[in-house]
Length: 436
Image 1 (cartoon, helix red, strand yellow):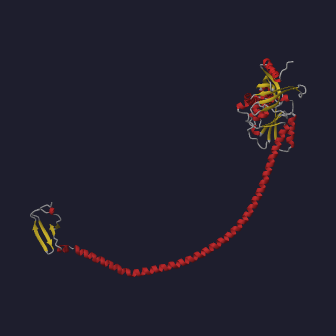
Image 2 (image 1 turned 135 degrees about the vertical axis):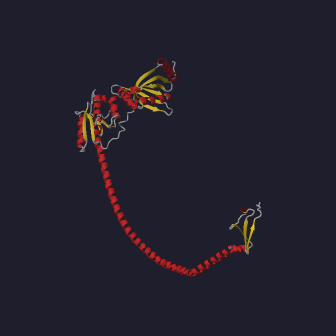
Image 3 (image 1 turned 90 degrees about the horizontal axis):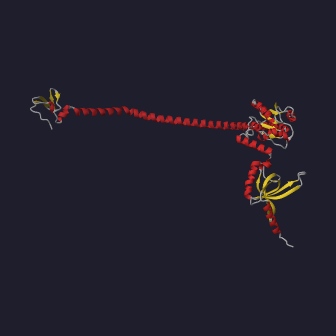
Protein backbone atom coordinates (compact mmCIF):
# COMPACT_ATOMS: atom_id res chain seq x y z
CA UNK A 1 0.00 0.00 0.00
CA UNK A 2 1.37 3.39 -1.00
CA UNK A 3 1.86 5.84 1.87
CA UNK A 4 2.72 9.55 2.27
CA UNK A 5 4.90 11.28 4.75
CA UNK A 6 3.27 13.90 6.92
CA UNK A 7 5.20 16.62 5.13
CA UNK A 8 3.97 15.32 1.75
CA UNK A 9 0.42 15.32 2.99
CA UNK A 10 0.73 18.86 4.37
CA UNK A 11 2.19 20.05 1.09
CA UNK A 12 -0.76 18.55 -0.77
CA UNK A 13 -3.12 20.39 1.60
CA UNK A 14 -1.19 23.63 1.07
CA UNK A 15 -1.36 23.23 -2.72
CA UNK A 16 -5.06 22.46 -2.58
CA UNK A 17 -5.77 25.55 -0.49
CA UNK A 18 -3.66 27.78 -2.72
CA UNK A 19 -5.46 26.48 -5.80
CA UNK A 20 -8.99 26.61 -4.43
CA UNK A 21 -8.77 29.71 -2.19
CA UNK A 22 -6.46 32.23 -3.87
CA UNK A 23 -8.53 35.29 -2.90
CA UNK A 24 -8.93 37.20 0.38
CA UNK A 25 -12.08 37.04 2.56
CA UNK A 26 -13.69 39.45 5.05
CA UNK A 27 -14.28 37.52 8.26
CA UNK A 28 -16.20 38.46 11.42
CA UNK A 29 -14.66 37.14 14.64
CA UNK A 30 -13.61 37.92 18.19
CA UNK A 31 -9.98 38.30 19.21
CA UNK A 32 -9.46 35.66 21.91
CA UNK A 33 -5.71 36.20 22.26
CA UNK A 34 -3.31 38.80 20.91
CA UNK A 35 0.47 38.84 21.26
CA UNK A 36 3.04 41.15 19.68
CA UNK A 37 6.42 39.44 19.33
CA UNK A 38 9.77 41.12 19.77
CA UNK A 39 10.28 41.04 16.00
CA UNK A 40 7.12 43.16 15.48
CA UNK A 41 4.81 40.41 14.19
CA UNK A 42 1.34 40.15 15.75
CA UNK A 43 -0.08 36.71 16.54
CA UNK A 44 -3.79 36.31 17.30
CA UNK A 45 -6.34 33.62 17.96
CA UNK A 46 -9.71 34.35 16.41
CA UNK A 47 -12.85 32.63 17.69
CA UNK A 48 -16.59 32.55 17.04
CA UNK A 49 -18.91 31.91 19.98
CA UNK A 50 -22.25 30.15 19.86
CA UNK A 51 -25.00 32.71 19.34
CA UNK A 52 -27.18 30.95 21.89
CA UNK A 53 -25.30 30.98 25.19
CA UNK A 54 -22.33 33.01 24.00
CA UNK A 55 -19.92 30.62 25.76
CA UNK A 56 -19.47 27.69 23.39
CA UNK A 57 -16.76 28.23 20.77
CA UNK A 58 -17.98 27.17 17.34
CA UNK A 59 -14.82 28.03 15.38
CA UNK A 60 -11.20 28.86 16.05
CA UNK A 61 -8.26 29.88 13.89
CA UNK A 62 -4.77 31.26 14.25
CA UNK A 63 -4.15 34.59 12.53
CA UNK A 64 -0.99 36.54 11.88
CA UNK A 65 -0.39 40.18 11.06
CA UNK A 66 3.11 40.53 9.74
CA UNK A 67 5.31 43.32 11.06
CA UNK A 68 5.03 45.83 8.20
CA UNK A 69 1.25 45.38 7.93
CA UNK A 70 0.78 45.53 11.71
CA UNK A 71 2.82 48.75 11.96
CA UNK A 72 0.30 50.35 9.61
CA UNK A 73 -2.96 48.71 10.72
CA UNK A 74 -2.75 49.13 14.50
CA UNK A 75 -2.33 52.97 14.64
CA UNK A 76 -4.97 53.46 11.96
CA UNK A 77 -7.45 51.22 13.76
CA UNK A 78 -6.87 52.88 17.14
CA UNK A 79 -7.02 56.37 15.65
CA UNK A 80 -10.29 55.78 13.78
CA UNK A 81 -12.05 53.55 16.29
CA UNK A 82 -10.87 55.29 19.46
CA UNK A 83 -10.06 51.95 21.14
CA UNK A 84 -7.09 49.65 21.44
CA UNK A 85 -6.63 46.54 19.34
CA UNK A 86 -6.78 43.90 22.08
CA UNK A 87 -8.34 40.63 23.19
CA UNK A 88 -12.13 40.61 23.59
CA UNK A 89 -12.73 42.95 20.66
CA UNK A 90 -15.13 42.09 17.84
CA UNK A 91 -13.41 42.70 14.51
CA UNK A 92 -14.02 42.51 10.81
CA UNK A 93 -10.72 41.43 9.20
CA UNK A 94 -9.62 40.76 5.65
CA UNK A 95 -7.67 37.49 5.57
CA UNK A 96 -6.01 35.10 3.18
CA UNK A 97 -6.12 31.42 4.03
CA UNK A 98 -2.74 29.73 4.31
CA UNK A 99 -1.33 26.39 5.29
CA UNK A 100 2.30 25.75 6.26
CA UNK A 101 3.61 22.19 6.30
CA UNK A 102 5.36 22.81 9.59
CA UNK A 103 3.03 25.25 11.39
CA UNK A 104 -0.30 24.22 9.98
CA UNK A 105 -3.43 26.24 9.19
CA UNK A 106 -3.34 30.00 9.74
CA UNK A 107 -4.95 33.19 8.45
CA UNK A 108 -2.85 36.10 7.23
CA UNK A 109 -4.57 39.42 8.06
CA UNK A 110 -4.15 42.21 5.51
CA UNK A 111 -6.76 44.73 6.73
CA UNK A 112 -9.11 45.59 9.63
CA UNK A 113 -12.34 47.63 9.33
CA UNK A 114 -12.38 50.09 12.30
CA UNK A 115 -15.99 51.07 11.65
CA UNK A 116 -17.21 47.54 12.40
CA UNK A 117 -15.74 47.67 15.90
CA UNK A 118 -16.74 51.22 16.43
CA UNK A 119 -20.43 50.77 15.72
CA UNK A 120 -22.80 53.30 14.24
CA UNK A 121 -23.49 55.21 17.47
CA UNK A 122 -19.82 55.37 18.34
CA UNK A 123 -18.97 56.52 14.81
CA UNK A 124 -21.54 59.30 15.08
CA UNK A 125 -20.13 60.39 18.47
CA UNK A 126 -16.60 60.35 17.08
CA UNK A 127 -17.65 62.54 14.17
CA UNK A 128 -19.32 65.02 16.54
CA UNK A 129 -16.22 65.20 18.75
CA UNK A 130 -13.96 65.56 15.73
CA UNK A 131 -16.09 68.42 14.39
CA UNK A 132 -16.08 70.15 17.79
CA UNK A 133 -12.32 69.82 17.95
CA UNK A 134 -11.93 71.24 14.46
CA UNK A 135 -14.20 74.12 15.50
CA UNK A 136 -11.88 74.74 18.45
CA UNK A 137 -14.64 74.48 21.07
CA UNK A 138 -14.28 70.90 22.36
CA UNK A 139 -12.73 71.80 25.73
CA UNK A 140 -14.01 75.36 26.18
CA UNK A 141 -16.51 74.54 28.94
CA UNK A 142 -14.01 72.28 30.72
CA UNK A 143 -11.58 75.18 30.89
CA UNK A 144 -14.00 77.55 32.68
CA UNK A 145 -13.23 78.17 36.38
CA UNK A 146 -15.72 76.46 38.67
CA UNK A 147 -16.94 78.71 41.53
CA UNK A 148 -16.35 77.23 44.94
CA UNK A 149 -18.82 76.63 46.34
CA UNK A 150 -21.52 76.53 43.67
CA UNK A 151 -24.43 78.25 45.43
CA UNK A 152 -26.66 79.60 42.64
CA UNK A 153 -27.71 76.72 40.40
CA UNK A 154 -29.70 76.85 37.17
CA UNK A 155 -31.27 73.40 36.66
CA UNK A 156 -32.18 72.16 33.18
CA UNK A 157 -34.52 69.21 33.64
CA UNK A 158 -38.12 68.14 33.50
CA UNK A 159 -40.30 69.19 36.43
CA UNK A 160 -41.92 65.76 36.46
CA UNK A 161 -38.66 63.82 36.36
CA UNK A 162 -38.01 61.70 39.44
CA UNK A 163 -34.33 62.54 39.18
CA UNK A 164 -35.08 66.25 39.48
CA UNK A 165 -37.17 65.66 42.61
CA UNK A 166 -34.43 63.55 44.20
CA UNK A 167 -31.88 66.22 43.33
CA UNK A 168 -33.87 69.04 44.96
CA UNK A 169 -34.70 66.95 48.03
CA UNK A 170 -31.07 66.01 48.60
CA UNK A 171 -29.93 69.65 48.40
CA UNK A 172 -32.74 70.75 50.72
CA UNK A 173 -31.85 68.11 53.32
CA UNK A 174 -28.24 69.27 53.33
CA UNK A 175 -29.28 72.47 55.14
CA UNK A 176 -26.98 74.51 52.89
CA UNK A 177 -28.35 77.75 51.37
CA UNK A 178 -28.49 76.71 47.70
CA UNK A 179 -30.47 78.89 45.29
CA UNK A 180 -32.20 76.80 42.59
CA UNK A 181 -34.28 77.62 39.54
CA UNK A 182 -35.71 75.11 37.11
CA UNK A 183 -35.46 75.79 33.38
CA UNK A 184 -37.88 73.17 32.19
CA UNK A 185 -37.02 71.02 29.17
CA UNK A 186 -38.03 67.75 27.54
CA UNK A 187 -35.37 65.28 28.64
CA UNK A 188 -36.14 62.27 26.41
CA UNK A 189 -37.48 61.65 22.94
CA UNK A 190 -37.07 63.48 19.67
CA UNK A 191 -37.57 66.92 21.23
CA UNK A 192 -34.54 66.69 23.55
CA UNK A 193 -32.15 68.64 21.35
CA UNK A 194 -34.40 71.64 20.65
CA UNK A 195 -35.90 71.73 24.15
CA UNK A 196 -32.58 71.55 26.05
CA UNK A 197 -30.93 74.09 23.73
CA UNK A 198 -33.83 76.49 24.34
CA UNK A 199 -33.51 76.03 28.11
CA UNK A 200 -29.76 76.67 27.95
CA UNK A 201 -30.35 79.83 25.92
CA UNK A 202 -32.77 81.04 28.61
CA UNK A 203 -30.09 80.48 31.25
CA UNK A 204 -27.45 82.23 29.12
CA UNK A 205 -29.68 85.29 28.81
CA UNK A 206 -29.33 85.76 32.59
CA UNK A 207 -25.90 84.15 33.03
CA UNK A 208 -24.74 86.66 35.65
CA UNK A 209 -27.33 85.35 38.10
CA UNK A 210 -25.97 81.79 38.20
CA UNK A 211 -22.75 80.06 39.24
CA UNK A 212 -23.27 76.92 37.13
CA UNK A 213 -25.80 74.93 35.13
CA UNK A 214 -26.91 71.43 36.12
CA UNK A 215 -28.28 69.23 33.31
CA UNK A 216 -30.03 66.20 34.85
CA UNK A 217 -32.59 63.52 34.02
CA UNK A 218 -33.78 60.32 35.65
CA UNK A 219 -33.20 56.79 34.47
CA UNK A 220 -34.65 55.35 31.30
CA UNK A 221 -33.93 53.19 28.32
CA UNK A 222 -30.54 53.42 26.66
CA UNK A 223 -32.32 54.44 23.45
CA UNK A 224 -33.55 57.55 25.24
CA UNK A 225 -29.95 58.83 25.27
CA UNK A 226 -29.94 59.32 21.49
CA UNK A 227 -31.16 62.87 21.93
CA UNK A 228 -27.92 63.72 23.75
CA UNK A 229 -25.76 62.47 20.86
CA UNK A 230 -26.35 65.75 19.01
CA UNK A 231 -23.82 68.12 17.48
CA UNK A 232 -26.03 71.20 18.05
CA UNK A 233 -26.56 70.35 21.73
CA UNK A 234 -22.91 69.39 22.25
CA UNK A 235 -21.71 72.62 20.61
CA UNK A 236 -24.07 74.64 22.82
CA UNK A 237 -22.82 72.94 26.00
CA UNK A 238 -19.15 73.19 24.94
CA UNK A 239 -19.44 76.96 24.35
CA UNK A 240 -21.75 77.73 27.27
CA UNK A 241 -20.54 80.72 29.34
CA UNK A 242 -21.11 78.91 32.67
CA UNK A 243 -19.71 75.56 33.84
CA UNK A 244 -22.11 72.75 32.92
CA UNK A 245 -22.53 69.76 35.27
CA UNK A 246 -24.29 66.71 33.82
CA UNK A 247 -26.13 63.84 35.52
CA UNK A 248 -27.89 62.09 32.67
CA UNK A 249 -28.89 59.09 34.75
CA UNK A 250 -27.04 56.02 33.47
CA UNK A 251 -24.26 54.35 35.39
CA UNK A 252 -22.76 52.55 32.39
CA UNK A 253 -23.39 54.99 29.55
CA UNK A 254 -21.57 58.16 28.57
CA UNK A 255 -23.00 60.59 26.04
CA UNK A 256 -21.25 63.20 23.94
CA UNK A 257 -22.73 65.85 26.29
CA UNK A 258 -20.87 64.23 29.19
CA UNK A 259 -17.63 64.47 27.20
CA UNK A 260 -17.88 68.23 26.52
CA UNK A 261 -19.38 69.32 29.86
CA UNK A 262 -17.21 70.82 32.60
CA UNK A 263 -18.06 68.03 35.08
CA UNK A 264 -19.77 64.75 34.26
CA UNK A 265 -21.49 62.65 36.94
CA UNK A 266 -23.66 59.60 36.49
CA UNK A 267 -26.95 60.49 38.22
CA UNK A 268 -28.84 63.53 39.55
CA UNK A 269 -28.20 62.38 43.13
CA UNK A 270 -24.50 62.12 42.32
CA UNK A 271 -24.60 65.75 41.11
CA UNK A 272 -26.34 66.82 44.34
CA UNK A 273 -23.79 64.92 46.41
CA UNK A 274 -20.96 66.58 44.48
CA UNK A 275 -22.39 70.09 45.05
CA UNK A 276 -22.90 69.38 48.76
CA UNK A 277 -19.43 67.88 49.15
CA UNK A 278 -17.85 70.88 47.39
CA UNK A 279 -19.67 73.27 49.73
CA UNK A 280 -18.81 71.23 52.84
CA UNK A 281 -15.23 71.00 51.71
CA UNK A 282 -15.16 74.77 51.36
CA UNK A 283 -16.74 75.19 54.80
CA UNK A 284 -14.21 72.79 56.28
CA UNK A 285 -11.43 74.66 54.54
CA UNK A 286 -12.72 77.97 55.89
CA UNK A 287 -13.06 76.48 59.38
CA UNK A 288 -9.55 75.10 59.15
CA UNK A 289 -8.25 78.47 57.99
CA UNK A 290 -10.15 80.17 60.82
CA UNK A 291 -8.68 77.74 63.34
CA UNK A 292 -5.18 78.23 61.96
CA UNK A 293 -5.73 81.98 61.95
CA UNK A 294 -6.87 81.99 65.56
CA UNK A 295 -3.91 79.86 66.58
CA UNK A 296 -1.56 82.07 64.61
CA UNK A 297 -3.02 85.24 66.18
CA UNK A 298 -2.69 83.71 69.66
CA UNK A 299 0.92 82.78 68.94
CA UNK A 300 1.60 86.22 67.55
CA UNK A 301 0.08 87.88 70.63
CA UNK A 302 2.08 85.66 72.98
CA UNK A 303 5.26 86.29 71.02
CA UNK A 304 4.51 90.02 70.94
CA UNK A 305 3.89 90.06 74.72
CA UNK A 306 7.20 88.29 75.36
CA UNK A 307 8.91 90.61 72.94
CA UNK A 308 7.49 93.69 74.65
CA UNK A 309 8.56 92.44 78.07
CA UNK A 310 12.05 91.70 76.81
CA UNK A 311 12.16 95.03 75.00
CA UNK A 312 11.03 96.90 78.12
CA UNK A 313 13.76 95.20 80.14
CA UNK A 314 16.37 95.96 77.49
CA UNK A 315 15.18 99.57 77.25
CA UNK A 316 15.41 100.02 81.03
CA UNK A 317 18.89 98.57 81.11
CA UNK A 318 19.90 100.53 78.06
CA UNK A 319 18.51 103.78 79.47
CA UNK A 320 20.37 103.25 82.75
CA UNK A 321 23.60 102.48 80.94
CA UNK A 322 23.10 105.42 78.62
CA UNK A 323 22.41 107.84 81.48
CA UNK A 324 25.56 106.66 83.30
CA UNK A 325 27.60 107.00 80.12
CA UNK A 326 26.21 110.49 79.46
CA UNK A 327 26.87 111.55 83.05
CA UNK A 328 30.47 110.40 82.78
CA UNK A 329 30.79 112.11 79.42
CA UNK A 330 29.46 115.39 80.89
CA UNK A 331 31.87 115.16 83.84
CA UNK A 332 34.74 114.51 81.47
CA UNK A 333 33.61 117.39 79.27
CA UNK A 334 33.33 119.69 82.33
CA UNK A 335 36.86 118.81 83.43
CA UNK A 336 38.20 119.22 79.94
CA UNK A 337 36.42 122.55 79.56
CA UNK A 338 37.82 123.89 82.87
CA UNK A 339 41.33 122.79 81.89
CA UNK A 340 40.92 124.35 78.46
CA UNK A 341 39.75 127.66 79.99
CA UNK A 342 42.72 127.78 82.35
CA UNK A 343 45.09 126.99 79.51
CA UNK A 344 43.47 129.56 77.27
CA UNK A 345 43.63 132.27 79.97
CA UNK A 346 47.29 131.50 80.61
CA UNK A 347 47.99 131.58 76.91
CA UNK A 348 46.17 134.88 76.48
CA UNK A 349 48.00 136.31 79.50
CA UNK A 350 51.31 135.42 77.87
CA UNK A 351 50.17 137.02 74.64
CA UNK A 352 49.12 140.18 76.46
CA UNK A 353 52.48 140.36 78.21
CA UNK A 354 54.31 140.01 74.90
CA UNK A 355 52.04 142.59 73.30
CA UNK A 356 52.61 144.98 76.18
CA UNK A 357 56.41 144.73 75.80
CA UNK A 358 56.18 145.17 72.05
CA UNK A 359 53.77 148.08 72.50
CA UNK A 360 56.19 149.88 74.82
CA UNK A 361 59.05 149.59 72.34
CA UNK A 362 56.94 150.30 69.28
CA UNK A 363 56.84 154.19 69.45
CA UNK A 364 60.60 154.53 69.69
CA UNK A 365 61.08 152.03 66.88
CA UNK A 366 58.46 153.84 64.82
CA UNK A 367 60.07 157.25 65.42
CA UNK A 368 63.51 155.85 64.53
CA UNK A 369 62.20 154.25 61.36
CA UNK A 370 60.49 157.49 60.23
CA UNK A 371 63.53 159.58 61.17
CA UNK A 372 65.68 157.38 59.01
CA UNK A 373 63.14 157.67 56.20
CA UNK A 374 63.23 161.47 56.48
CA UNK A 375 67.02 161.45 56.39
CA UNK A 376 66.96 159.37 53.24
CA UNK A 377 64.40 161.74 51.69
CA UNK A 378 66.48 164.73 52.66
CA UNK A 379 69.55 163.11 51.15
CA UNK A 380 67.65 162.41 47.94
CA UNK A 381 66.53 166.06 47.79
CA UNK A 382 70.05 167.28 48.26
CA UNK A 383 71.28 165.03 45.47
CA UNK A 384 68.50 166.25 43.22
CA UNK A 385 69.21 169.97 43.93
CA UNK A 386 70.20 171.71 40.60
CA UNK A 387 73.04 173.46 42.37
CA UNK A 388 74.49 170.07 43.34
CA UNK A 389 74.09 168.84 39.78
CA UNK A 390 75.78 171.96 38.42
CA UNK A 391 78.65 171.40 40.80
CA UNK A 392 79.09 168.01 39.20
CA UNK A 393 80.06 169.77 35.92
CA UNK A 394 76.67 170.03 34.29
CA UNK A 395 75.01 173.31 32.93
CA UNK A 396 71.53 174.46 32.09
CA UNK A 397 70.75 176.27 28.80
CA UNK A 398 67.66 178.45 28.68
CA UNK A 399 66.07 180.37 25.87
CA UNK A 400 63.40 182.85 26.80
CA UNK A 401 63.48 181.58 30.43
CA UNK A 402 62.75 177.99 29.44
CA UNK A 403 65.19 175.12 29.51
CA UNK A 404 66.40 174.01 26.08
CA UNK A 405 66.05 170.27 25.85
CA UNK A 406 66.90 169.81 22.13
CA UNK A 407 69.22 171.45 19.64
CA UNK A 408 66.35 171.44 17.20
CA UNK A 409 64.70 174.18 19.32
CA UNK A 410 67.50 176.68 18.41
CA UNK A 411 68.21 178.47 15.21
CA UNK A 412 71.12 180.64 14.14
CA UNK A 413 71.12 184.03 15.86
CA UNK A 414 69.02 182.84 18.83
CA UNK A 415 70.05 184.38 22.16
CA UNK A 416 70.58 181.77 24.90
CA UNK A 417 71.60 181.87 28.60
CA UNK A 418 73.84 179.11 29.97
CA UNK A 419 73.95 178.64 33.77
CA UNK A 420 76.98 177.06 35.50
CA UNK A 421 77.65 176.35 39.16
CA UNK A 422 79.60 179.61 39.52
CA UNK A 423 77.63 181.93 37.14
CA UNK A 424 75.88 182.52 33.82
CA UNK A 425 76.94 183.44 30.29
CA UNK A 426 74.88 184.91 27.50
CA UNK A 427 75.58 183.85 23.93
CA UNK A 428 74.09 183.69 20.48
CA UNK A 429 73.80 180.60 18.23
CA UNK A 430 75.91 180.88 15.18
CA UNK A 431 74.91 177.65 13.51
CA UNK A 432 72.93 174.44 14.06
CA UNK A 433 74.24 171.04 13.05
CA UNK A 434 71.76 168.14 13.44
CA UNK A 435 73.29 164.98 14.89
CA UNK A 436 73.17 161.98 12.57
